[in-house]
Image (cartoon, rainbow, N blue to C red):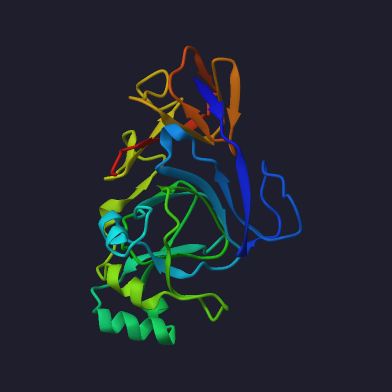
Length: 270
């Protein structure tokens, strides 16, 4: 079975005035996220696009155990980002340049100097980052990316550039990892091998028409198939960049010569 997932458009203060093709812009609001409705077969995962004209808040998320200990019904949030587009000098922050103390992080979050403590990474299309729960992170302006995450909305904002939104400094400090970002957590879609990320909650692989050893994407069970480049057809239904498909099995498959597909599979954690 293969089916295209419905989308919803989410306005954000840091979103874009006009979405890039192939997405239509639904109204006059700034749109920052496009969500694909999670199906019952993969209800612990969420796939979305993020488009930024301004920087997102500096934030972090709890893991499953921390979320439960804090009284949340949903689990924690491991996530990954796959960059689809980036303006010149666009960047993201993941982790810190060097180890910091909780007291140092609190002080820096209050006065804004946390921006200088973070490890900023210049980004280009094809870069991919795994963001474990607890990692302090931010997305800069001028970035478009695909995010695969645990289906949780628990976000603790540490710093928000003076915007009139709630901060969650005390909770954030309880879960924040104060270590540098591990280089092994960065990858590229056009890099070697098929595995991008293997986390405790999900696995993300890639399939390329020119590079993969198999003639079609291989899945062990229900999976999200997300076109990164080109398009493909399964059992007579066509998919292109901007779509997200739930695939439980396939009888026939064909793809354009330039097709690259991201494959996201759920690993049950609760």
